[in-house]
Length: 131
Image (cartoon, rainbow, N blue to C red; front, side, top):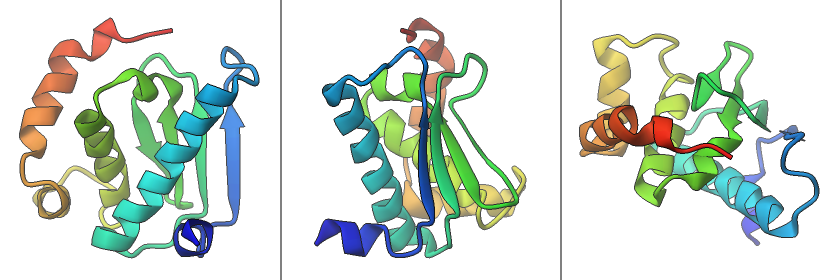
């Protein structure tokens, strides 16, 4: 099953979204983003992920800590799927390189060759997406 494949190294899922409530549609979107994260990790990075957290944030689309916790903004769910994939890949690449060095960008590019297009799109249009 998809659960056993994508959740095999996963300890915890935390959804922290005071604005989302218990909307089943929103929960399905969160779940889809988590599955996509594990799928892309298995495909390109093969790293352990301690936790994925979804939280309403105003300044960042995502972050990755040295404790292997990835946090995504719930606003990410409003973006086009290619941009969501770019943000997920960007944060997964931090599991390999906790910086924005040339090696970090090589990891991003190896998973998404057209990442610059989506990074540019996000920088130009991201401010227009909010709840």
